Image (cartoon, rainbow over the protein chains, first blue to last red):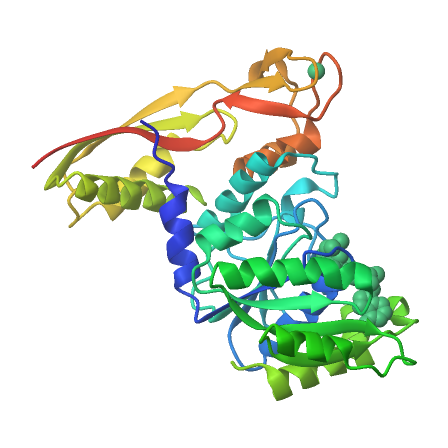
Length: 245
Length: 134
Ligand SMILES: Nc1ncnc2c1ncn2[C@@H]1O[C@H](COP(=O)(O)OP(=O)(O)OP(=O)(O)O)[C@@H](O)[C@H]1O
Ligand SMILES: [Mg+2]
Ligand SMILES: [Zn+2]
């Protein structure tokens, strides 16, 4: 016999949040991380908010948030670092900026471990930055998060849409709530309503678009610069207009 | 210390398992502690002694079994043990203590240098057996 003591804790922890928002796409590089991070900072003004970077292979939210390069404090569990009101957890605290090559089974173990020992306490809303794809991280979210309300990100490219539609298909099939679809990196020359219409045909709320900002990268070195961008402003307005929280 | 949350996890899981088996009281719980995670038995014990009060595990005896950690390379099948690895950097030990999988950030197969290895035994904490009375 072998009972994994973490599973019960993980289920309880997810169930304790009022809102759990996995930010997903299926497609890589469409802005999940930058949107998750901005979203958590915006929502933190209204709710006690946490951000969990679940992209263990390509963790990046700690860079945007300028997280400390040291272990989070411990007190009957691990206390996430709090950054501008956001309780933040990432595997990057423990990899010392080294690569983390591991298989999906090991990913699941790391996920259960981090979630089982992290004390989110009275956090009401947890944003989860997901890696691309439909492998273990995606399936673990389906398995352990029963109160999730997914935010799906796409870019206008056909190569993204095709994959995102598959993600929507599986979420629908599994009866997972979908908060809506965000169109990111829309070129200024593009005025078509394709993604809007597509969202409608899938009965998913279209939450709006974020333009492509060619110089965005110049503002990602410091958190205060990031917060001052039009990109950030755009996320703020999507939250205030469209998110049913 | 995060041993406390592990103690909480062990207690909740044992109680849940006991309820599944229609037990009224837990008498004994065997807990395996994997070497890789380096969990401090004394702190888990202390946590359990505090947390079990007023639960069906109040009088249960928690027995800890230490398990050596060993690895097997998926590339060349080489098998080796944690004790053969020179891991004297304290911060690396701490990192692995929190999330054992980050061992893939810090060690490689001693024979072929691959990061693609499995922790065959002694990864972390799990419950091996529970006994009780109906
Ligand atoms: N609206 C935008 N305008 C300009 N650049 C953007 C925009 N949105 C995202 N980017 C940039 O695109 C790149 C990818 O973004 P990000 O890392 O957030 O994507 P991701 O979906 O999380 O990727 P992955 O699938 O690898 O996790 C980053 O360099 C980011 O700064
Ligand atoms: Mg990302
Ligand atoms: Zn090898």
